[in-house]
Image (cartoon, rainbow, N blue to C red):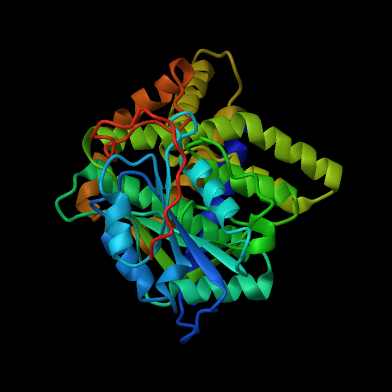
Length: 400
């Protein structure tokens, strides 16, 4: 029960503080010129359908196209050709044994070591960003000399179903409301995978190579233990693309299975390092990471509360666990309500809220599968529709 109550309290506190602070945080800081000495890394795997729009957004916010580096990683489509036609630098990498975003970023970092920039910013190849995002991120990195994360949300079309809309709301709660909340309390946020910026001296030493599907969480942990906890800003905003159909199910499985693996393997490590280094910020990061995916948190509370009620009714336990769980459930409900009032009404009108139980049932197979066939590594997605090359070659194209 304690393992459920503590994450519920952490979730509630972050949501209450974040929802109260969002309006004061979301303010225009004015025009900020981007520093000339930066590189933008865009790892891309079969992103021919999306990368041009992303690069157009980026090109409008940098001084020179050569500052943008696309890593066409194990691509079997026209990603590299399209990127090159936009005038940016393109690195092509083919290595089927080492697949995933982490390997692509590590490849790019090694490439720019000979002439390193002051700041490195990472964006996914299917995202859009608001004007001034690059400048705000770069400015904060220069000022704070630590990793910085912008708001990273997912987009949903008007015709998308209720499951997509609830997923988008859950991401808003995690990447926006809770990130503002924990930052307002004075503790580090999580890196979100896109819209994250680093001083070169820190990124150069970071362990990037790997195929974990939650490499952003792992990177946050590794950097925090090394003393480089991330900061959070709301003056820059990045919007990604929520996959559809079967790919959406696979994407959510990767995210949520990866998060559960982090809870079981990395939270104890963080607590051990917090004790060894006598650092409260690592304790708070561990508590933040210990909150399971929102749907699972609600499902676990429903199950635990129901079982406690049954055992109490049979006279097997006292009323105290039931009372504690009722308080925790009330906090969860109020926190979700506060987050919904602040950021969720646009995606989830009141008329759609009754569909949430259906969404929870839809998520059950994902969680059951974690204990049978966990999906915590990079796997093929909807972008892998064409045959992939079989020959292992690593090549670089610096055409501008």
